[in-house]
Image (cartoon, rainbow over all chains, first blue to last red; front, side, top):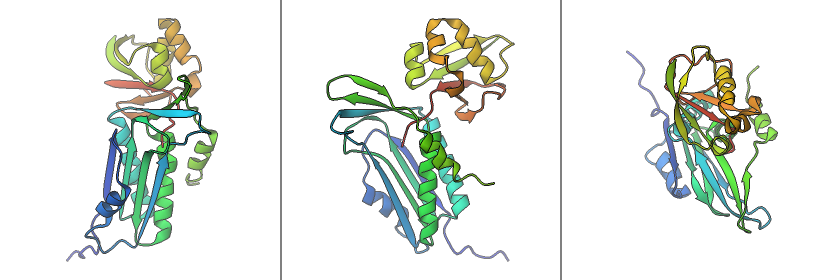
Length: 162
Length: 86
């Protein structure tokens, strides 16, 4: 007879949306009704004002692929770190300084996997999920598209397995 | 010749001046890199958008590919700059 699984299957929630999200509600949704989760790590990415110069960010995305790519990254994290669940929500459209851009939640039995899982998802999301930021300044000009940073590639590469 | 849907994002979209278009590809266009080289012959806007070929990212049917990837029977090919989300 096959052994009865001791834990529920890992849950993945991915959303790409214009509207804001409620961080506490998302943590609750991931962990409610489960007694196998021992650790939940949450990362929130917010829009910086860039020394008072920035009026807003404009987030462009590739509909369909954005969701699919984030889901692939979350599923990889679940397999790699044996997570109990992962949630990733990324906003698009106009985002004002101080507002949320992205939310990542990783749940696991012990804390290290949740920390690593959240970090892994963010590092891959930044370099592989099809989103692009454009900066709009307070003087009414568009400073233009944000350049990709080498540091983000380096952050991702630390997860490469030799 | 075959028709594919091309979609553009961020500054690639702005420089080409289109969100998307249907393009007839000659049979000599085999890989993603061939596609970029072919598009650069379509005018100044394409040339400006794709001049730094190495930084252009390509997705075939919504999955990332390298420039040497064959296009195969792709229905939708996206060209865009390095991503800056998160």
